[in-house]
Amino acid sequence: MPLPRWKTEKKFTPRRSDRFAFGIWCVMNRGRDPFGEETRPRMDALDAVRGLAKKGCASFEFHDDDLVSPAASLKEREKRVRDLKRVMAESGIAATMATCNLTFHKCFKDGAFTSNDARVRAYALQKTMRLIDLAAQVGAEIIVFWGGREGVEVEASKSPQEALRRYREAINFLSHYVRQNRYEPMRFAIEPKPNEPRGDLFLPTAGHVLGFIPTCDHPDMLGVNPEIEHCRMQGLNACHDVAQCLEAGKLFDIHLGAQKPLRFDQDMRFGAEDLKETFFIVKLLEDAAWPGTRTFDAHPYRTEDEDGVWDFVDGCLRAYLILKEKVARWNADPAIRALREEIACRDPVLEAACAAFSPANAQALLARHFDPDALAAHRLRYEVLDQLTQEVLLGVR
Image (cartoon, rainbow, N blue to C red; front, side, top):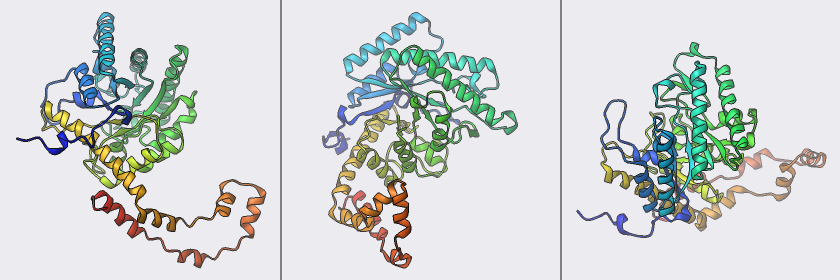
């Protein structure tokens, strides 16, 4: 069977300067789900790192348990780290983010930082401190906290106020640990999710996390790691989620994938669903020249073998680059630019007066005569703008 054209053409081939990354757990995923056993053999973490480097990724992200078994001895752990650093040097790939697996083991069945069991909370801190040490050894400067077990099914089981206090205590403890060990510029990012695997998770949205950050001891160290799928699970606009984090200066990391709204966490290949919203997420990041890593956190379909895993990687990278090109085309389109300028109806004097309060600005606005009927008569040709956007995405402009 001949290779698809996109397997051989060079136009959308990723480069290190694109700053792409994958969580290695994505390509190590074995195709298991709640109703069936794995369909692929487990890939070794070092092979995952090598493979991502060959695909043009600049970096990778990892869980502690992806790399080193929790049961490993200190000697085994040190050898594993040496092996990883050797592979990184040989492949020219970096580690940008690390996250602690506080979900898989049954001891975390009722949470980690918010568990009712003080012993579990202490073990979660110990495990995370060891992950932070590991991240520092390999140069990862972002630690992500995904509270996948930090929640409830039975509301009577926990006070949400007490749970959030415990969550804050853990983040504070670990931020002091980073500073005490002089691991700066290491930073933390909290990854929100509304539900699944728990019925209701704490800090379920980017807005919740942004509200939580200022209550911590070192809010300058804390940001958000929004994931497209998690936002779409709530039926919300993922582009707006990312934009709020970006506008607040708190977009520390991002996880890209695809998801049908209001479903279970599908973790599909980037671009596989809702191309228009996905286009605007790419546009948001590229127009802002956001300096962070474009990281994919999704899973190959359960139907794929190991070769299909790398097809999945190719698909994510290629989809981003195609949409990036369409962003440039959209921005440069004369009809779109003219329409946006018409819609904007700029007034530098009024814009300056509204931008910041002063007694003079307040008086100027109070003295200004506005005709609401004339304002309402200004035509907003959003139908045309949306159609032009569709035509760019469909490849006819």
